[in-house]
Amino acid sequence: MALDRLFRRRRAQGEARDVPELWSKCPQCEAPIYKKDLEHNWYVCSHCGFHMRLPVEKRIELLADPGSFRSITSLKPADPLVFVDLEPYTERLQRYQKEAGRPDAIAGGTCTIGEVPSVLMVMDYAFAGGSMGSVVGEEIARGAERAAQEGRALVIVAASGGARMQEAALSLMQMAKTTFALERLWARKLPYVSILTDPTTGGVTASFAALGDVILAEPGALIGFAGPRVIKQTIRQDLPEGFQRSEFLQKHGMIDRVVDRRKLKEELVAILRHLYGAHREGHVA
Image 1 (tube, rainbow, N blue to C red):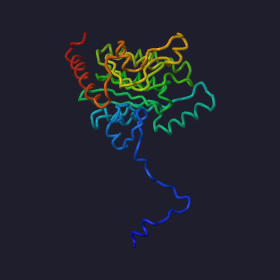
Image 2: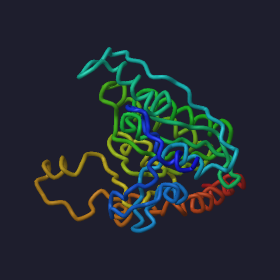
Image 3: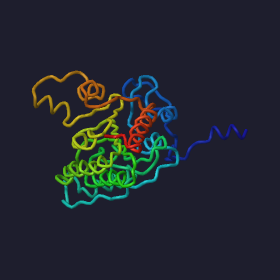
């Protein structure tokens, strides 16, 4: 009788239904995927291999050795231009910060990757499309400088729609700043591995993302400077199939290898151990 009353109990009118969604759908093949399985598979569709966007915390968990990550990013953005479009920039920032749970579009820290001492910087597409403003540029530069000072490898995971328009020229200046900061790393002959994810575009592609000693990319990632539609309208020609996707760019020499996310840690460790080992033994030219 007690069980019968339990299952027949009516919810009070207006009572919220706190029922978690247990299933997701692949954006490419539309196959239903149990969310726990999706998380276990690092957000890669088990049916077609489509790589969905990976949350920053999961990316750090994927690449950094367990328990080794120590955050080094804490800068908060300002609004020196007092920029207003449909709403004030400061209000946009507050909304982005609340949604993403971080000050700006990047998280970084010191860690080990396959026991190689490293600085890992991960861009967050969930924060304003991963756009690069003054904070992102400064954090990337500081990460590179810290790696140089402490004798660490540098790994940057890019995911960005480009420079942040609300900061205008200040965001474009970050292209030069980040490139200059990498010079200090190279002066010490320390390795820098760039990992390009979907999407990596605009000023990020045109600066630090394309300057790695080794450049890896995830399958199917959109990578380029301007968008395909803009390029097509500019050159007035039809673009090749798969233009600006990682596989096309590997074929034409812009990136070194396309790596399935589930094998990315293994690939990255092999690269870092080789390059960092060569640095320690003084074999890097």
